[in-house]
Length: 388
Image (cartoon, rainbow, N blue to C red; front, side):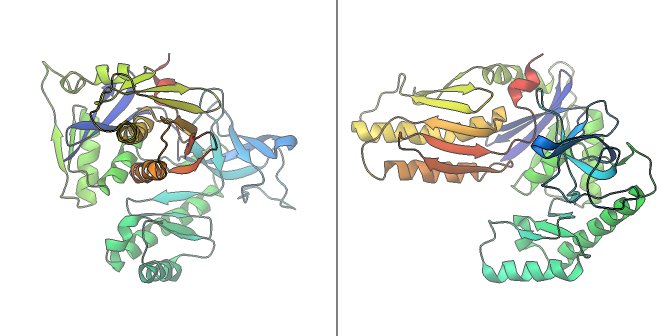
């Protein structure tokens, strides 16, 4: 059973996902996040050596904006298509500020539902998890039929199970909203926020609902009200929503979340076998070392190592989710001599990474038998959020 627990932790909203009673995912959301908001921005300055601009959106911290990666949506009168200081452009925040790095903005504006998203890319994308060619071709033609010129979309995995009318309804609704935002932007002043994203914890629920979420428990009245409205509007009946009201024991205490958060700050992670991981988070990458520790096994030594590495592969992926680690991840598994053993570990990693709501991938095994993984950086790591 998948249960989502939502509560308050310091100045964050905390969401903890439990799968069959075990903590499998954890997210802290800043109350002041601007992620996915859409603004009329003003180009503050151009930095030619990195082909980038910094765009003021009126929040006090300008957004980094790649000149080469974006097709600019100008809102001021222009005689050419060259981006210059003072230009007004339509942008969406694609990454929150992280450490010393500014927020990142894009001109590829998007709106989404739990089934799909519509954007200004002009490209139709279909989830890689939809394998059947007939299904992919049908969905592609369906989207192509209704999307306005210049618009694109990404159809999530769940679309392969939905009636055409549901997909068409979402595509039409989002296309109309997006077109309205673009037209409204032409008459709005600089720094106007044209679209404020739903609370991030609601976005997280949308992803997890498609993955089989069955229950939500919260002790925050505002959160409860927002979910109650959303579930009613979307006619979602397969998720139980509970308002927790015990004044003697809040949800943080009931689920022992402060202890879990303290453990997630530590470098060492013990596993059931007695083996452990050492996780080092640096500016450049995340390095994870697998150690045998106190692990004892009656099987052959090689089989013993494979068991530890298999357990570690699952735990590594869990820790990436819980700690929200991203970028380049290097894992030093215990050396195994038998050919094929590392292929087993690779298969486990790929299966576990596929469960992640953040794009993550197995990259390679180096000549030194180090495993390289990547995970997309979208928001601050748990460590960064908890560091005062």
